[in-house]
Image 1 (cartoon, rainbow, N blue to C red):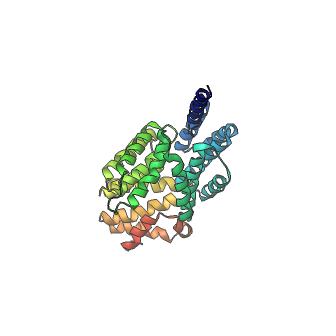
Image 2 (tube, rainbow, N blue to C red):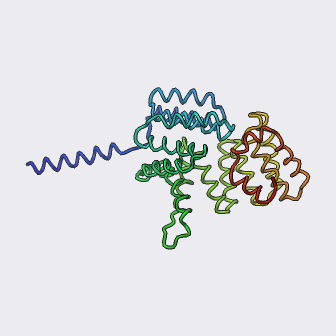
Image 3 (cartoon, helix red, strand yellow):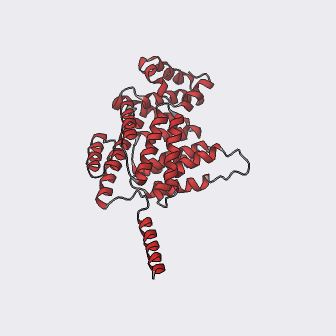
Length: 312
């Protein structure tokens, strides 16, 4: 009898443990509100997105903290709003969440740390988050883990006999970017850059177009598309997008980070396309004091390429 009771208790313990498994699942109403925030953010309606995120936070403070700061990070990525990025860092450092929401909090905080010059701390924070995601069977969690694991495998790809699961991680991210309603852009963006690093620019271009079919004229995706076109030596097409991007960003945000990214890219696009006059004209814009103030925020790979080729 005692043995039977012990077996029943063991089974019940296993059942409850399974039920308590960390998850990114939300209630139907919470999911609808999160999707609303995602839609507003992708539509560049950041004020409305933040208000909706604050409503979510009243119901779930931990996941809501993550959501609010995903919006702030998106504002930085698009508008170059460094104040929003720094505020996101402060909030993500101090707030706490449960289960896989804590993993996502750490994941986003690791990104902020890296962007603000604390790359070692950022790597450690992201690693901690990835370990929490690794055990999950949920597609979204597997995709967040794939972002981290892909670059780890890439870093050690030169070692003999080291397993390389990058193809599987690409597949996971591709699936998640198609199926996830709340995180699709967070998965699509690194996926594009992974194919860029592989020099598979045609696939990167297709992915950008897929994103633009869901978020027409999204300014970040348009710049990414131009990067693919440039690497494919479609200089006129790349220049056309970046010219329009520079005009649009100057109008929307002033001479922000992405405005200057457009300028820097146009320098090399016109140079490589055989138009030194236009390349020089865009280079002359760098004499602006507002560029000097933001120079340290420019993408390292872009700056290295321009300096290496004496284009700055």
